[in-house]
Image (cartoon, rainbow, N blue to C red; front, side, top):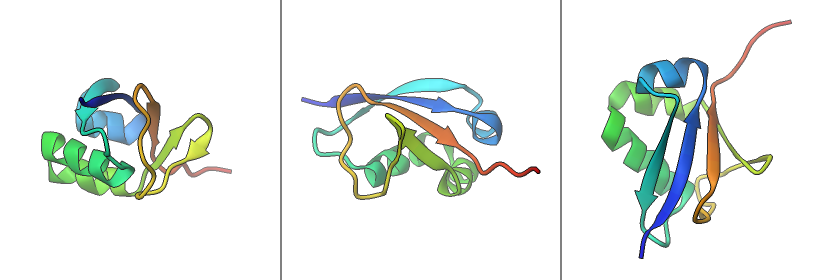
Length: 84
């Protein structure tokens, strides 16, 4: 049985992906690192580079590579923002 997460992309990472959101199916024991690898395989090298500098946020918490993913999670990919 797989798990499904909803990825939402903002700013530059949305431009690189060419979409603002997508549903991704993963193995039941998938981690954030597995998700990143799956997304990079789908979208290519430039996406992988952009995703590497993004914060991945779910339920108000920044995710780490070894965090397990919950089925049905909504994950936001937020690139770094600058300003003052």
